[in-house]
Image (cartoon, rainbow, N blue to C red; front, side):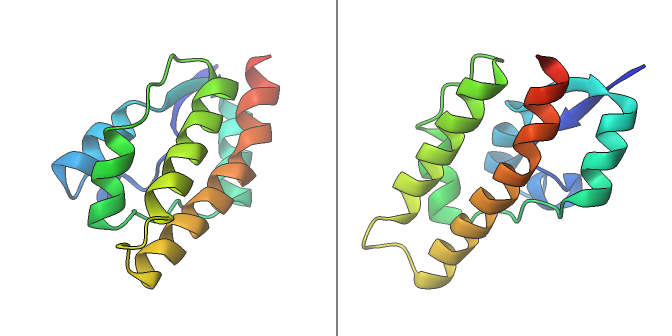
Length: 114
């Protein structure tokens, strides 16, 4: 059986703003239920990006429902968004933490789909 996995979790955090909800809806992949359960057991939730980064990332990403491309594109967009000098250091740290957690999820998603 296959489950729909939202790369950006938790639902409560990411759906707390319209921009977060829209970004979260762009990264959903069907993976094996056992793999999905392992992923959630072994990886923490992706922290919600800061306000400025959320807008910048949403306006930058172009997912094509191909996980290798989509994850790379998302990581690049987050990195680019938080590297701006106008971003507060805490927001930058949130971005880097989010990137780290997304990287932890990558093998579960990519290995299951391919």
